[in-house]
Length: 109
Length: 109
Image (cartoon, rainbow over all chains, first blue to last red; front, side, top):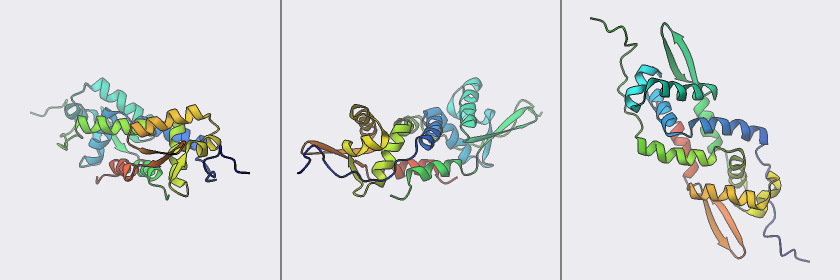
């Protein structure tokens, strides 16, 4: 007897675990904001692969408190590394963090 | 005279344009959700590179209306393609869509 209510045979491929999806979504949420995408882009493209807040306010035309707020979200998500040197904090991309996210999107099909 | 308030010389690297950041953030927001990450993962891994809602409810342990809601967000963001065949709609990854997002994260530094 054909089950006409069934459109197709389930692929049987295991779903990404709920835990992994939860962790990844936190990182994607951190970069899923126009200002934070621009911050990550600026820091990635900077000559020394790092930048301080004073480097970032002018290109984004944002105030320092707003830039600092967005930087903190990226640090908390494990995407940026923060290092205090003297009076300034310098931000760099956590090695491998963006490649890992990119890898999720291009995993072998 | 040294300007002691200045921590460093701005890199001068152009920021990603506000328009591009806005468009990309819409796509990243669409996938920055645990259920939607799992849906994209399931569809990518499916044998025919496509799936219908009936394939997706069981692995995610979600009802059909919830799955359909998340699929619509992914279609609207240009990540999934929807094709109606008979009574069922089939969903596939828009060719190149995920690679393009991954490319943003791994652009030449």
